[in-house]
Image 1 (cartoon, rainbow, N blue to C red):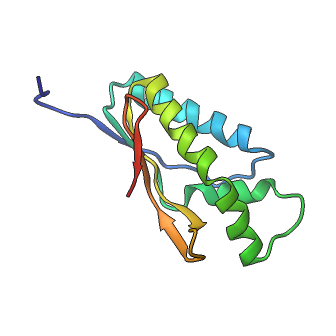
Image 2 (image 1 turned 90 degrees about the vertical axis):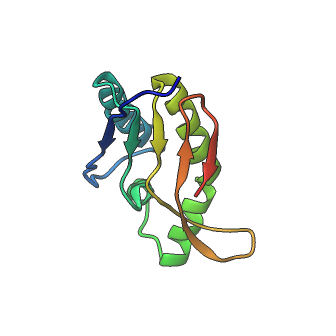
Length: 122
């Protein structure tokens, strides 16, 4: 049966340096748990959220190298969102993630993970 009301949370995420993808994921886990704890049905992450991951690089990256680094992270990002949504029983609208597709086109995609862990690109 459908609910009469839904509660949505919007994440304001400070783009601070991270030393690893794990640290980045831990921060998102904390904020997502907080939103779920307040009874949110949905959490909306900000646009270009995963750019924060580039701060973990040991050297300064060119634009092409940055896009490649983020592209290499795409499957992990999708898997993480699904696990996080299922763990906290919340629907996640994953902001956007810059990556290069199989045809070499740079895209800014939003991945959505439902509270059952299933997801899709938007």
